[in-house]
Image (cartoon, rainbow, N blue to C red; front, side, top):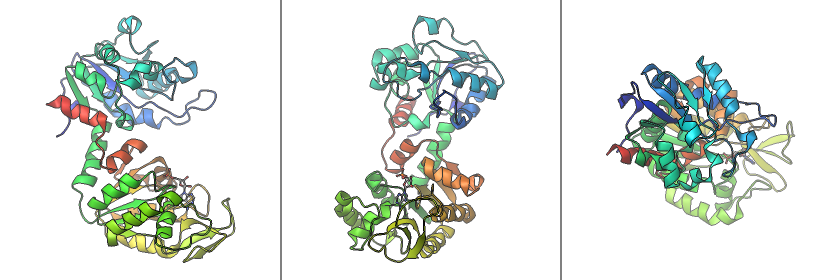
Length: 390
Ligand code: AMP
C-alpha cells in the first residue's frame, strides 16, 4: 500500500490543512534555539501556496498536557515562519472553535493554529475534536514525520473526516528512504547501531537482523553484548537485566552481528580524561568509544556497502576524545557512496560535526518515528494515510 502525495492533489482554490512538526527547542526566555524543523516544512508550505491553496498549519509544541500554557504558544514560531516564508503568517488564538473558523485563510494566505496539545482531546484522538479540526479544511496533508508514530487527532483521527488526505513532501521523502532501506535495499545493506541502551533498540536489532547483511554494534550497548559473551567489561555501562536477551539476539544473528574488538577506556567520563586503547576492558575502567581496530573493521564493511542504515553514536561523542569512533564512521559512510539513511539526533550531530552532512542521502527528522519504522512497527500516521487512499 502507499499514500497519496500532496503532488497528487488539486489544491487550486482549496483550503489545505498541513500537520507540520513545529516542536522546536526553546530557550527558557522563549527564544527558538533551532529553526531546523520550521525550515524542513518550507518546501511543502511553498508548494501548497504555489498551487493556489490557502494554508492552515497545525503542530504541537512541548507537553502542555491538555491546558493552554503561554510559554508553549506557537506565536514565536509564526514570527520566524513569516520571516522564512517572506509573507505574513496569521496566528490563531486556538486550534478549533468559532474564533478560528472566523479567520480561515483565503488563497495565498497562511494561518498557524495554536498548539494542538492545549486540548487534551488531541492526544486522546478524540472523535469530536478530530471533526472540529477536519471542518476547517478541504484537504489534509501530513508533513509531520516526527509525530507519525503517535495516533492523535491531528495525525490520525481527523483523516476519517476529510475528503482527501496525502503525505507532504518531507513525509514522502522520509517514507521513501526508510521503506527502501528496510524493504528493498541495494545490497550489501549494513546497519550501524549505537547509543546508550540495548533496551531502547531491541526491536530495531531484531527487525534489522532479518534485513541487513551486517549489523555493527557500538556505543555503551556493545558492553551488554560483550558481557553476554562472557567478557569482562570493567565499569562500562551494562544492562544486567538484558544480558540473557543479548545472548539470544547474538545466537539469532550469527555472523551478521559485529561487536567491537577494541575499546578506548578511561577511569572516568570527562573531557580530556586520560585514556588508552585496550582489547578487553580491565576492571576499574570503562569503555567510552570503539578502538582503532574496530573502526578499521567497520570502515571496511561500510566501504563495500550499497545501503547504510545508522542510528546512535559509537561512543560518548559529546566528550572528546571519545568522539573519534563516531566521527570516523560518519566519514566512512560519507565516502562509501552508499545510499545512507541516518536517524536519531545524536547521529545527526556527529555527522554535522564530521562536516559530511551533505554526503548523507537522508537524515531523518523523526528520532522516535524512524526507530519505530526500523523496528518494523507500522506508524499510525502513515497507516491512516494509506487507508484513506483506498
Ligand atoms: P541513544 O540516545 O540511545 O542513541 O544514546 C546516546 C547516548 O549514548 C549519547 O549521549 C552517548 O554519550 C551515550 N554513549 C555512547 N557510547 C557510550 C559509552 N560507551 N558509555 C556511556 N555512554 C555512551
